[in-house]
Amino acid sequence: MTPLGAVVTYVCVWWIIFFMALPWGAAPPANPEPGHAPSAPERPRLLLKVAITTVLAGLATWGVALVIDSGIIELRPPPGTFD
Image (cartoon, rainbow, N blue to C red; front, side, top):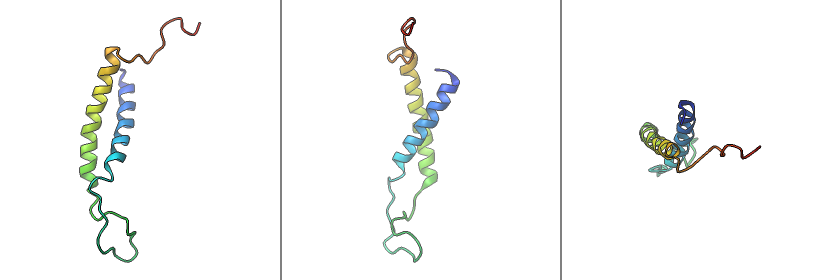
């Protein structure tokens, strides 16, 4: 995998994992203040979710790179396919 491919893969995986992590532990307050959305989480813990997402995305990108570099999944067509 090229460095640019690794960066693109990391960014895509990071956002997917981040959106999956957002609802975890997000509970609305028992008594929301006037003017606030009643469904807004009381303690979203975004920094924790960003830190966990960063680590998990790094591991997932490493795993994707291992699979691609091993040849298990070939992303390029064999030579002469489109001649």
